[in-house]
Image (cartoon, rainbow, N blue to C red; front, side, top):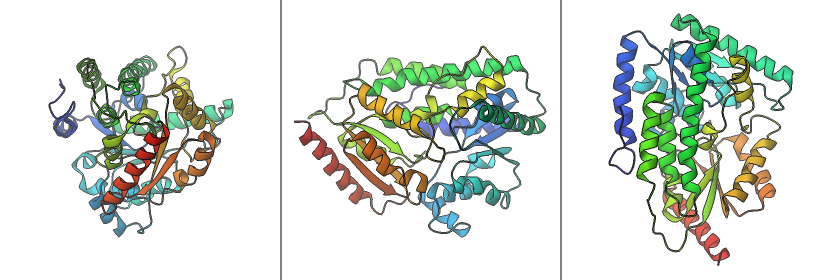
Length: 380
């Protein structure tokens, strides 16, 4: 069992190291480990097929630089880092299969490059680019999920039983519900949780077994029940949007939370991971297809009106005063969305382009401080 740690609320590094040892033991006993990169991958299906799903969302500057041996310098920093970590990161090297989704162009081509470097079986899940939930599109996505099931089953030797798949769906719903129950604590008038802590919990939820992370969430929720952050003046309430924020590369969050409070986000490694539940009263493959097809769309899908509806709802419900829109360098899908978001919300918005280097760290701090001061003055 895992317990809340002393380094803040969570010692993510310690828990991750412990889990790595567990995964090595699982693998030695024949358990297949399935690495996935995108939140459109149905982890419930992977578990039902006898695999242990692990989200691979690590990145750092050294691995991104090393990735330039295989990708040009103006390629996505996350993809460059992922390409290098497949052969250098101990967690990635444990994987028995890698699962991708055809999202942005760079991620769509990444499995082809990885296949030239390692012999790990790779599967690319086809997600319809058009996000309107017409029956034919959901039926096509269900077909793609069945293809994924066949791929995983060939490697694990475990056929998917519908009842077991329903059980995994229920467990997934319990996990998302537990995370939502603690996520809301950062949005209280007097927040009890930071967004940095939330991202740590969500990261652990994609690494640990649900039976371990769900009690840990409950334990931490109990710990922060009477927590008080004495911050004067009252910090502005922000929404964080934009590109993936990788594990271990969260300087933007840290800098923002020095001066402000992030009360909401629409990041794929953040709150978008925990949205909604999967129906349990119909065919499990159809339920999975509907849920994952209808997730809040990222900019690689159109129309993405659901994303804007979600943001407007968060702005109203959580009394958001400003938006911080962070994009990785060369992340064109999110970069091109910035103007529309600014116009759609009418709120002050700070746009940040960054990679995993710290060369512009102090400049970034200065821009954030100026933005926060502007919001404080506007609120007087």
